[in-house]
Image 1 (cartoon, rainbow, N blue to C red):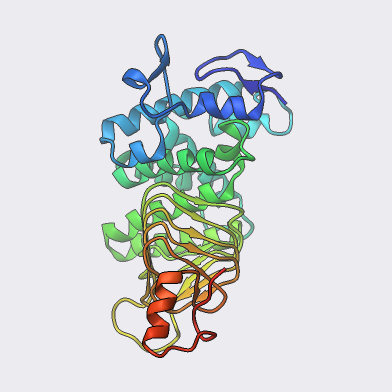
Image 2: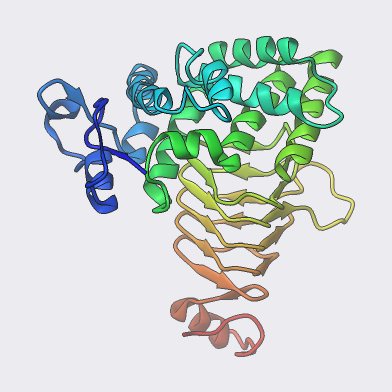
Length: 326
């Protein structure tokens, strides 16, 4: 497969290594005036984007979209994928519009879909054009994907094919519809949630609050409950549950996940607990207690933290009960 040789270039090359591709895609954050060389704009890091103005995020979106279009043109004449690429990426006028067109093709094309393709396209494109959260989300989520996933070899690859990107964007749109109020809007939001579950194998309630720069890798089996909060720059692997305990609780029932967190495959976080900034929840962990900033939790509420273990033992805790060191 060909890889691009610089941002904005239409000349493919097969000699550029993946590490070289990534260095050009994400240059050092202190490059002068947001440029690599000449007038070629560079792609900002996710950390820069999260703190950037809407105008700056829009510029990044256009830079990404221009490159995606260049790559998509090479696919346009394919008898298999060409018609889809033409009516999604190449028919769009910007990055959020292209994402909305991809989502509309998925939603309307799903077995048993209640959506007519034209109506779905009009709805998703109009929300994507108007919603600040949706527009910023498309740009920051894609940026997170290319930073976090070293399987990414081009911008078109995750944009077209990573269902984790698609379902988070769909959830942002359903959330916007829910906040608009009215019975019809709320039921449309729930219908989009249902289609997300059927199409992508992911269930995110429209009232869950999602930050910017969320990358759901592989995605299948993810469940995020209605009062969950997910921060910025979060990586979530497949099979994760952010759920309730099943007890009858008024108000918030689901977890709050801090910025920079990693949620490992098949991990389960239950109840109104907090996962601190930059924490790691290990694969298959079960968490029902708060996890502090920077801590790693594995097993059943077992935190890999020497200082916290010492404090627990000093209070008479059982060494084998909750905490251990590696």
